[in-house]
Length: 115
Image (cartoon, rainbow, N blue to C red; front, side):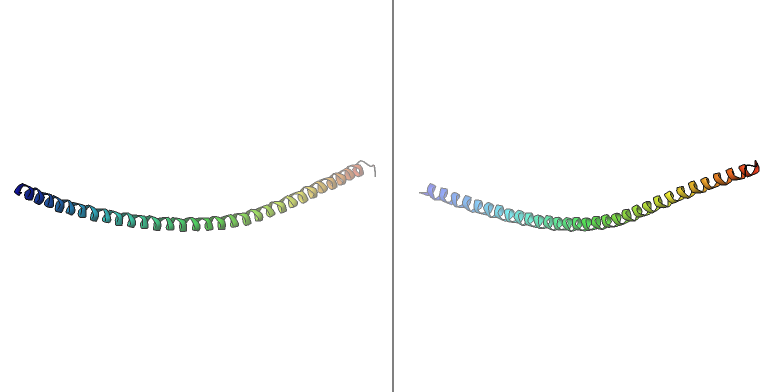
């Protein structure tokens, strides 16, 4: 009977030790779960900040695209106007050259006595 009491006492002590270990493991698990929750919350905050940054970058890109399109349209209009001016200049020079040729031919003919 004494052996049974001693064995029962040993079993109770082991149960108490195991209970303490289980409680310590439970506390450690809860602490790790809390740490993981904190980490997940931090990651969510980081993801939200990244989303905000991406939205701002998209807005900036849209603004740049708008200004680029406006500048392209302005440059294109200037190019069209320069082409018109260039063509007018070519026609003017060609007309002036033909007029000079006719005048020069007239002077030559006058000087040679044709007129």
